[in-house]
Amino acid sequence: MNRLIKKLLIIVFINFIDQNIAGFFSDLLIIIPLTFLAYSLYVYRSDNNIGAIEAFLAGLFIDLISDSYFGLNAIIFCLITYVINSYANAFKLFSYLQICLFFGLSSTAYVGFTQLVINLYNFSYLILFVSAIVNIIFCVLIAAISVYFPRNVKMKI
Amino acid sequence: MARISPTPSQKITFFFITALGAFILYLDITTNNFDIIKHGFKSIKISSVYIVKNLSIEPIKSLINLSRSKNELIQENKNLKKALDKSYLNNYLISRDNIFFKDEEIIRKAYKDGEYSFEYDIAQLRYINPNMYKCCDKHRMFIEVTGTSEHGYKESIVFNSSGIVGQIIDKSKFSEVLLLTDITHSLPIKSESNEFFCNANGSGKQEIIICSYNPLVWNEDIVLDQIFYTSGLGGIYPKNIKVGYIKSIEKISSNLTNLEIKLFADPLDDNLFGVLKY
Image (cartoon, rainbow over all chains, first blue to last red; front, side, top):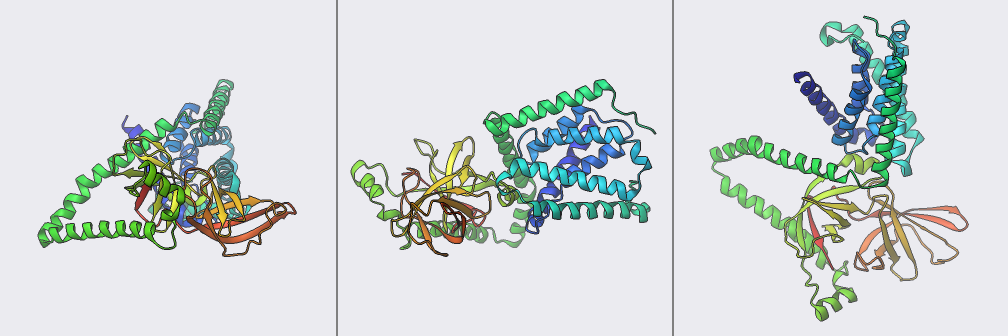
């Protein structure tokens, strides 16, 4: 129960940061899906496979708190969980750069899919392209920090 | 520790759960079935923020105020601010630029039927998602109306000190306002000369509505910065209210032109709104 509450609080906190930075970045044509990236990292770092129901409920909860359509995050979270579960062992053979590319591109796919649903009439390839570059750089930065400052971050990618 | 790849049964579970998610998404987009849950959550969120603020920040604030012995002054300041905001709304209604009072239908109703007395209710902004407003198609806002209308506020006009921002579409604890820029919103507008009429749809962009028309049918010359007014044809908004000005003109084809109209009023500018029904 404590773990569940802790997870929910972390989701709410990350989503809160996500929503606050989104306003600033949207003026620069950038979308960084922080909640999605954090969840992906959680699934990736988990010792056991994350179940479909857990992914679905986490997505549904984020749909509720982020004011988007029900099911939107639930579907994407299920898909990313399935992909990461499937390739969890293969990731160990990949370099950091390849893993960063994977997460950067999957977050771009997330941006594209969510924009198709919630912003269909103003869908912009420019936003998608800029977001892809920024997300990949962001993932590389996170990986670099965890590699070069392991004591400070205490997070291993 | 190695993780095993999903087994066939896990794959089937993922497939069914994803299909269920897709079904829920479809339902939410096409129907209003989940609105009760969403509104309930928003109400709880707003109320809990209010309670937490009252329990945590307000006591600290009042302690500081007590120590400075400026409580009365601060209260007076708050009242003055509220009165000032209200006067801005009044000024908007009675300004010369506005023709709320020159609308013949309103005047007829006011004098003949006694239905309308030029009074409006004050509403406080309770919730707006600036991210959704800046990025996406769905532009909504929640306000709390401090009045008691017998007929409810559904389809009432919501305005701030700069102009009309939208209409109330739903009333739960807080009134949901469909903003002019919402992709589903359509506003009948006209030019000053009364020679051009058009339905301006919300663009999903901040402060922008788009009017698509056939230049072969409407031959009035439309120029940049030209001001547009409500036509009153929709039955919701009174006519001759300034809406916005032409920001750009895009000729799509020989029989289709898009006018991008920048609105005078931005809902993010004010916390206080007027709610008017006529």
